[in-house]
Image (cartoon, rainbow, N blue to C red; front, side, top):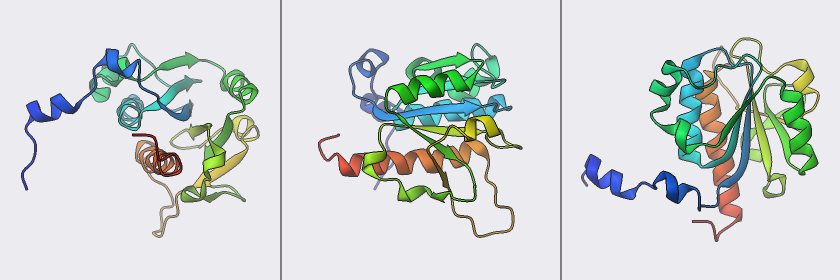
Length: 183
């Protein structure tokens, strides 16, 4: 075994133009008042890798153009479709009109493990909340379902970008496993 060289890895990548023609996974993501520019940049990078449909930055979530986001995102701002909206409620209403299931990544009184999402739950929008306070009550009340990442230590919290990465990759796996024709 040997690791690939940067040139070999580059050959495997899609161009921005190619990305415009590729079917994206039916996963929207809504960031609800994320405070850290570095978490936003990291979420952009993970969103690119997971080939999500669209990223919505809402509330006081930092958004491009911001040098710190761009530095952490490493070009993903150009490859991930995204929009900024002050009010997340408007986006959720719009997505619900398109029959998109709204799923909170949050520990609630009836949240289920993140790996129990079903193929019929797609298309979906994964809502990610503030690093300290989580998803706002108003936004949470609009969610159809809540998922959580089981944790076995004493903290019961992960960095928001790490939690997002764990959850979105499981969602991609569930979707791709149920849609064998997706390459």
